[in-house]
Image (cartoon, rainbow, N blue to C red; front, side, top):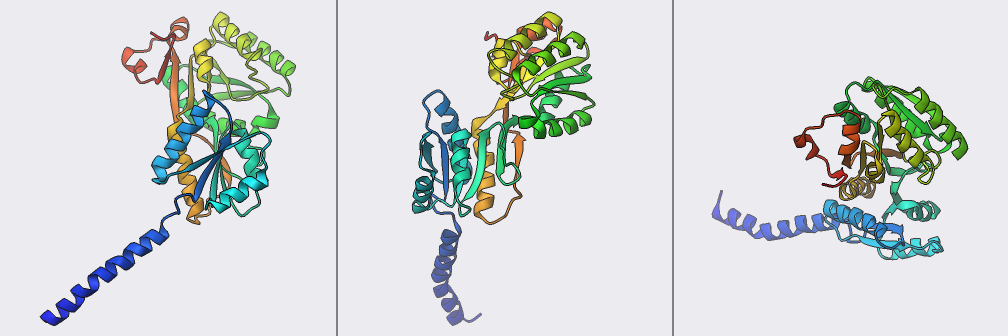
Length: 316
């Protein structure tokens, strides 16, 4: 190549670099194109949403603005504020965030997280707080390979989708799922009484799902934990508080990693990937374990395995 041509090409390089750099900048999301709305509540619960937002920022590499939503918030004004600030996709956390987001018009993309269930799951997309039943059953079988049946009491109005997932997951892990319906607290109490009276601790385990009707914290949980201990029928859950009170183990949210997963969904919406609507179960989980309950049920858990748990109760 002649030196004159080489000089001409070299002269064009800065302009080419500038054009390419400009294209990359234009393609990158605006600093506030993703917004997060969450309930305006105090500590310690606010820390949950702070950790989720940190995960979102880590995954998107963007500074994400959070908008606390009060119970009496004007949702139309909130959406207008988001739009003025460049918000094109909203990650709605918690019940208050979900209520606000579902009141918005269709011009804002919505991703939902931090809720146990969503009434309009076919229209929205996001991640529930229900740990994937497949993860729960896998953990159960690793600890208690002799278990053959999982008993669960559920409210069909709020947990039907969860039970459908659980049936498939149980089948794939060689488990029989005994799902007992209860529409109110009294019916739930009767179901638990019947379940424990016929359960066999050598082959059965009881699952406490995040169902506000059938897993009432003030009445059902103490009853179930007492019967679990007296009849040597292990309980597993999705609440670390249940493990603290005597459940064998629980899978509970890893808030930072949940934020990363929600960010991936939001970026997909932002980039026009048109991800299908639907709520998926939580896969970003931590593990809690109660060694005293394990000992009571005759389980031997090696010290090395215990070190893999994120939380151990009673605390050493």
